Length: 432
Image (cartoon, rainbow, N blue to C red; front, top):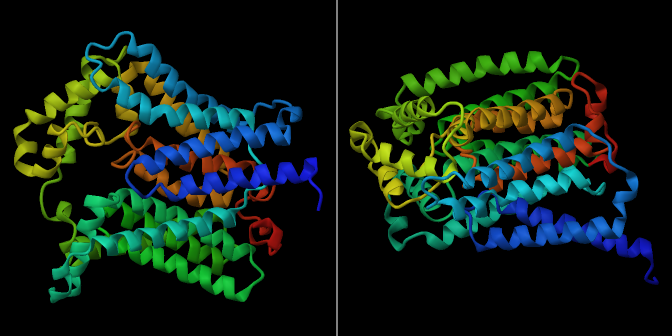
């Protein structure tokens, strides 16, 4: 086969897809050089693909994807503008490094996406990432691990190894929830019975991994998502709303069982057995907003002041020594109010509040009629308001999820799915 323009475009497109999936696979792991290289390959491959495919000839049409992309870029613009007014710029360079992903993904969204992405690409990439996580955990297992007597003790050691060396339970649980939704879509699109059985196996595998983790919100999301998946796959004629309401009943029952009974799950969740330190963090966050609700104080100054308040909080000192140590060591992924909206309000005042609300609302509006995206985004939306997305340190994963949503939103297949429509159960293999 000779080299021609079409062959070059195809090679460039799949190089960009491979780079994107590499970055997607890095989400569950702590930010590292691997993540940095992944971002470099991703953005470089996008530029090459964009030029080779001549996508600028398609014109520029304002849609939800481009509005979301603009709001991502706005987060970096605000960081830059407020940097001139920072009282203490100690953390400013670190914030720039981590929030650079906002700028990159924003420009990618404005310029347009490759039309060769498929749901199956992301689904199987999530499985590769989980396998890599297991292999990594195995390499950290100590010699005395086999001497432990009970499964509960072994699980706790594995959880500790993962949390200390690889990723937090919040990050992996969110990733697994997205994987459950992706494999559900693969199930509906596949003509292969073997692939359907495999997709069901992976969905329940991810569900079990979340349940044995030590995250309450992760378990809530997993139960909600599994309820939606089961009812959608078994009662296809019902509307999505009925699936949500029915699954909530299951969630309430499971939640009551976890909270009010003695069980292995409860024993592995310290927050259910003692006072949660987040109530002190949220209280300090609200007090911080009251000090400058209109103008804000800037990202770095906010982190410095927030750290000082938390270190002086006697209740926090008595309730969570581990979190306090992270704060004292200037670990930025702990020096925040554990709430995306609250943090943006603290940093940029009223304009920051409007910017982050605009981002969330636009995403919700853009996916409201697409079942796959609703299922992927539901667990993300729940956790955005709690303890996983802080607007800075975990922004790499956050932006990659948004990029996933935008890619699927622009997909000719997924973008046309409607809740309650039989198109969602299409069996055309090429749609995956």
